[in-house]
Amino acid sequence: MYEIPKIWAGSQSSFEHMLEAMASAEQMMQARAAVRDPFELPPLVAVQEGVGIVDIRGPLVSGSAGFMRLFGVTGYADIQEALMEAAENKGVKSLMLNVASGGGAVEGVDETSVLIRSLSSIKPVLTFASGTMASAALWLGSAGGRRLASATSIVGSIGVTTTHIDRSKQ
Image (cartoon, rainbow, N blue to C red; front, side, top):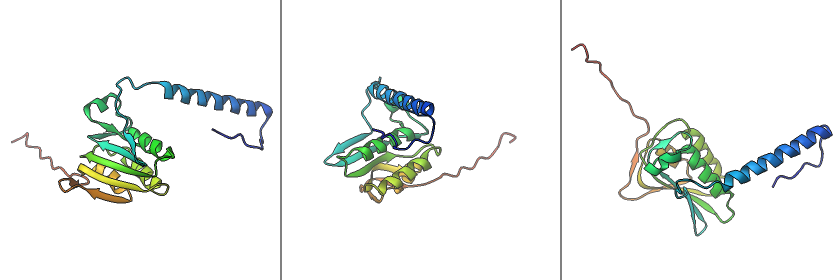
């Protein structure tokens, strides 16, 4: 939990407001933890023999996927939450990104890859392409310290260029 600083430069009133805010934030965190997932979806992170396995699957979207996880969609906020959960778990000695995604939205991918790279300085991060790892999924997977792929995985393709020709007047 949070340790109160030994020196307080503000007034007694501001100190008391700070303590109230901290207590309120703690209550909110406890209430949030008590709320069950109404869809009872499996978590994105599983721990096996000291390895935190984070699943990155399906289309990737900005923010949280919410109910769309029922349809195989993964949100960057969901991935970030799973990564932080694994990083904070003292029983997790290393992380593995289990990637099976063709990619998705650009918004949020850079922030998530920066988080993966920063976690690499705390715990080793391995990326395993168990299926397709392309586009935004490749961006995320490349942030891991070491990358592996199965013999039948499809790995590659960042960015797509499309040509559109207007033939309406023909």
